Length: 126
Image 1 (cartoon, rainbow, N blue to C red):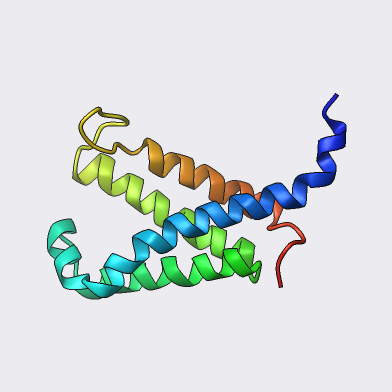
Image 2: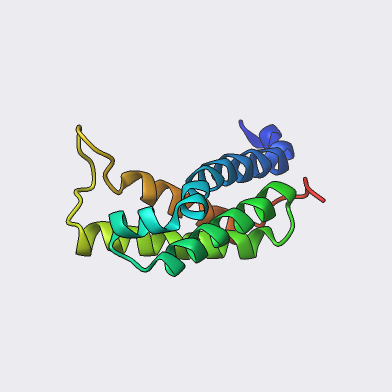
């Protein structure tokens, strides 16, 4: 019934790459602009926060351009595993909460990056 839609799988992967990239680029910028402030908030070294922001921004560029999309997705999946680990083990954040973001959003981003990693980035890109 939906076999005709398979011809648009490259477009679907491109849209997924764009959405994931925009989210990570948006979250990378504060880490690059104010690593010290973010470090205090996250109880991590400022250099580590800056490197995290750099990985997020460069991987976002890779996803947008379709250059090393699978490597970019792998790196971002690792970032999300770390984020979920921090939220669950260090900060005790619940899966979902009405008054704050739980780690459900992180899990969705992890799954999106795993989908890109396993399916490739599609043919749309440089």
